Amino acid sequence: MKGKKTLYFRLKRRLYHELIALIQWPRIKFYRVISTAVVIDHGATILQPVLFSGKGTITLGKCTLGSFPSPLFFSGYMHIEAREDGSHVVIDDGVYINNSACIIAERSLIHIGQDTLLGPEVCIFDSDFHGLKPETRHTGQHTAKPVVIGQNVFLGARVTVLKGVQIGRNSIVGASTLINKNIPEMTIATGCTSYSERRLEK
Image (cartoon, rainbow, N blue to C red; front, top):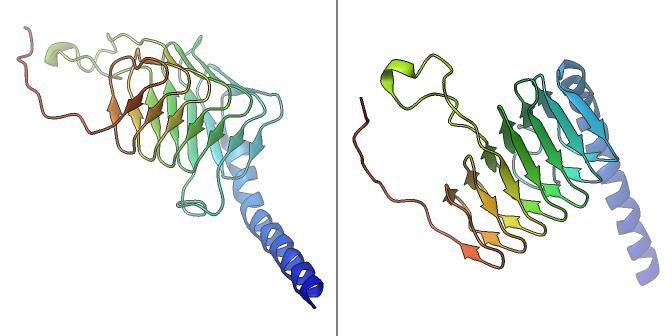
């Protein structure tokens, strides 16, 4: 009797996951059709719709994009962008990115190292996207700096990583933490940044 129950639940689980995949398949295909970036795919598993955007190149190793069951699986989508010519996003083998992440390399490189885990709604940017000075804010005269995330790093839900940051291997970043400076390897970084103020230079 126990064996029959086990078999029943295994079959039920399999049918359940096949139904989930069937529901997501049209959304995944639609987002792939409207994507504009050059994608070099070495065997990624895509479980949630991903918009690959921009004029640059996105390289995917044997990674997993999307997670079920997890928040925003059906309602959200993942945004991976290599915005300008020469920009590049590299996601290595074994990387697991949860739902609705946003990764934008505007003018340089974002590299996510092997076996790294990203929670839902993680954001990674190589740029401020606008100048800090009021008179140049709309001119596009701003810089970008590469972001490098080492091997086996764990970024919790809603972590934001800003331009120029390097995160050392095996480190952990707690949920909702804003990272604007380098993190050494084997480090736990937690907490939201506190308010700070400085005058804009004229």
